[in-house]
Image (cartoon, rainbow, N blue to C red; front, side, top):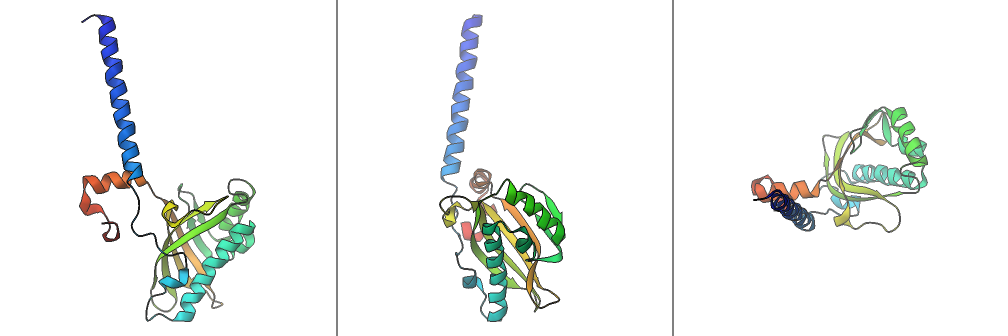
Length: 199
């Protein structure tokens, strides 16, 4: 085999592998939908037997958070967190304390997320005793048309507590970017790794 033929063969092989990789990625991406999208109304996930007033107050905290974001109001946004609250973003930034969360969002509202709003769906609300709750959901920030529930790209966990003044505030927030292609690959390769709601 001469040098020209060898180069052509290598390039052809590389092109076939690249196209196969692209096709595989596109297949995984287009088949990676979620089954459990949640509900757009927080009150729909208040568990049976829970204090309805506390459930509504937890949901009101999330509504106030969403409203503050839409207005770009960092102070109102920060007030939804406890004084020592923590906030972990999907890129791994970790804010400690209300002041840190507030100032970080003041900068975000002036730049990266200026003019955006929050979209959310709610998956589950659990009360851990009388004064603590965990709320899980899906969410995203957006400009323009509001994304549908299946389009929300992040999974979020809020840990809320009844603060010293009786108001429900967020003590910890964790935001995880959904890696839909990797998730789909995992479920195909090892189906038992899929959560029950996604089987």
